[in-house]
Length: 430
Image (cartoon, rainbow, N blue to C red; front, side, top):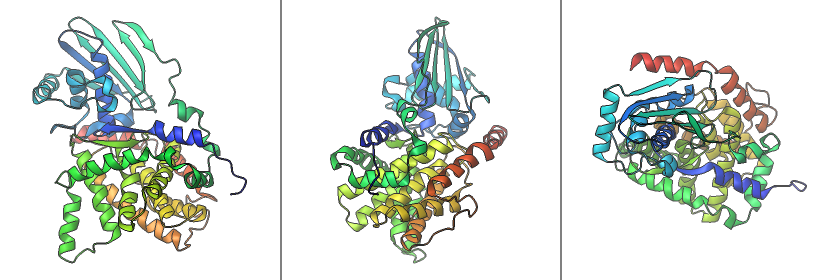
């Protein structure tokens, strides 16, 4: 690594750009944000709410629980955004909603005021919200990232437009194709501690979410694990502890508890899975805050890197293949592994779990997370024993970077019709 150069400022900026609090499943929050912003342009009683989504957005929010309610889905997310959303809170637009506001939103949905349709031509993240009242019409458009408002229109007149309409300034400028695992490793081992101290916020927020989930939410996975441990069916080992912590946060988030997660690449689930398996290991092994933050920086960077190739709303489960593999490389780092072992671990994860579909944000995501944690620990342990999958085995390439790009091709080319099939299943079985 003697001759490697690292742009510390760009990597730190990339991490900060891609990390932000999100209340509930991010797609629900984004729909609420768009509708809240459109509603803020109008006055008077709401007569119609029309929302147009790309396939991935529709799929991901279809069966999502809404934080602070017992409701789920695209229509109620849109109605709540228009009735009670505060767009200035971004992806936490539904924070603090009341029972009366929930009832008002449910009434709008029941009366057919809310219409949601899919624009199949839009592959990238896309939300168009139109709120029509007795006096005005307001339109807000979100593109590319969950909180990137690109257009505002009032009564047919464009009042603001982002001419760039790009994925994000940091992503646009960042040279992902030239980024290597070696560069990421060199960054996390040499960056000044204070420059990544903000990762403590991810730990604090996601642990607080897990604490709420441990009280009983969603599938209550950790409770079942504990009961089987008492019966001697399962051991109280490191993997189980990591699964419990991670699934507590996932169950809380997916069941709609009103507590935020620290998201990465626009997903709270990605943020949970890329962080809490590492936090569990660090707590058990007594790692310092500095060691933990460096491991989390590596995990988050890899998650961002992976999602750049597979897509922000992909047919593949990015929570596991992005966030889970991120957790895996962070574990390798804490175990004392270096670039070679990290590369081995990435390829193990790709060979194991590539093909796991994303069927939207729902309670089952916590089960995927449990599988991802198990795979992350196994992959890390194998890598630390020097076990390597031979290059060109299936989708495994000559390098871990090439393997990640192969995963991107599977997601964007090989599974291009997957979301359409999933949407058809959802729409015709509800």
